[in-house]
Length: 288
Image (cartoon, rainbow, N blue to C red; front, side, top):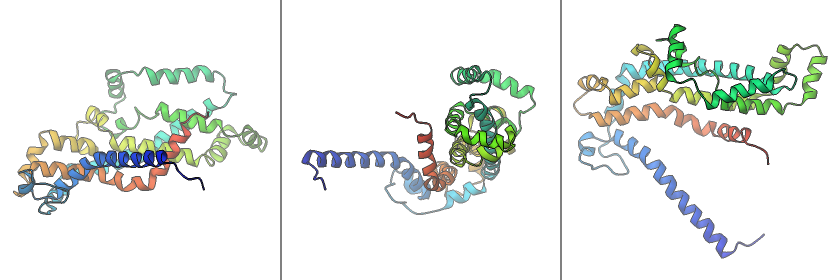
């Protein structure tokens, strides 16, 4: 066993202290939001809030859960996340696999065109005009189809498909598989890790997105959760919600509780999905 020098121990202790400080700085804002939402508004309004709830109460959460925007937003966001992720995965895989095969004629030019769209996008106004001309305004499809393929995720999937041995693909052709048969029976079945990683990336993207909903949706019943939360926090909806609240709930407590309710599903899922984020980083890396 190799003994550590004094310099190495000092370096390790310094790193540990530094990372603990960074962790506290990053976690404290969220901890403050949670404690604020659980505290009596009469106590936190005078800056009497510490590391634990001051006058524990769930009144803010009760009022948040009474909001129709929260419930409809959850339902819409779940639909967008689930359906949109399947669309994203299907179109991304169907685009990445042919480009990853050397026998595709013109694959270099097609790849260059895709990379061009990654650097130079069409812009908000042209995209909005296309969505309107397709009749997608005020529909949930407007939040799923315009951003169906993310170029970065496409590159990760292409890299994975390139690592599939050509001998495996050729053996499938010899056994009588068509191109579609090779893709669905061979490629998709051995590509579970990359599908899990890219699917997770797309799902988080759909869950956190509010700009597309704010841009394309006017019907409140179709608002995703993030758009509903935004209007509760900074829009005129707050006044209407506060008018229906109990007197022991302040607007700030209501805001904090809304934030917690919105991010809680992702926080609960992240410990179980963290390994897929790590895999995504490794799949997108370049070998030295």
